Length: 106
Image (cartoon, rainbow, N blue to C red; front, side, top):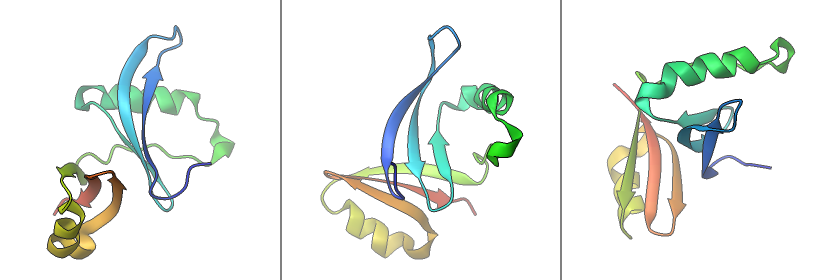
């Protein structure tokens, strides 16, 4: 089971098994953030909406206007983010020496 802070890659395929997009997934407290190719956002939202069952209580929305994603690389990345961005960071994931985070746009 995935827990808050987990960050992983996944591929989205069509009904014939052909790859539609390679996405990054960030598990937040009460949401899952799917980072995908900008040109495929509308297609993916429509595809997910088509396959959702109403009683699943799942909502899909495009938040690309509200969020930006950044990747910082290096041993001091986490310290820089902690000092510079403070409360603006929604989530950080530390993998080896890479820190990935999503931040609200202002």
